[in-house]
Length: 125
Image 1 (cartoon, helix red, strand yellow):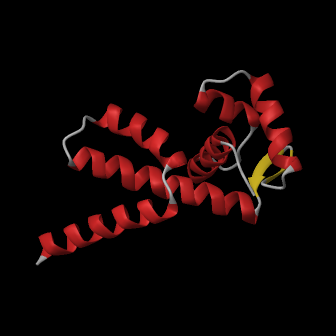
Image 2 (image 1 turned 180 degrees about the vertical axis):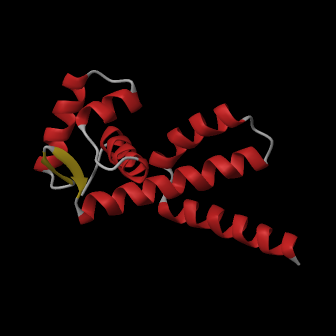
Image 3 (image 1 turned 60 degrees about the horizontal axis):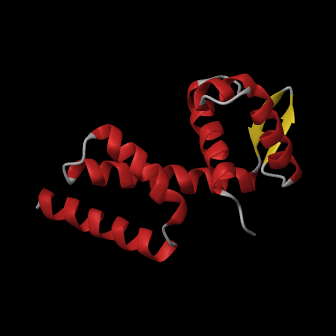
């Protein structure tokens, strides 16, 4: 199944908001992403139809939505911290990680993740 970059961004945002808010509403997503409520409403309809979220007043990730969101969130966290370690300023690293996280293959991401892990374990020795 192919999921678009914008859908991945919405799912990641729902995940991040659910970590800091008791419930997630469309207005929370709109405020976080800087989008109009009407755009968020259309996106939530599409995510509901693709069974990545449920929406009954509040928005919840389904198992498939959570899986995608966690994958994107992990990629973002690892890539942005790696870029910062390489000397990239935080804002640029965050922006670049956001672009890379959607396009990088699983194989390449896993290789980067492994290299970072090995680098960290070598530092601790």
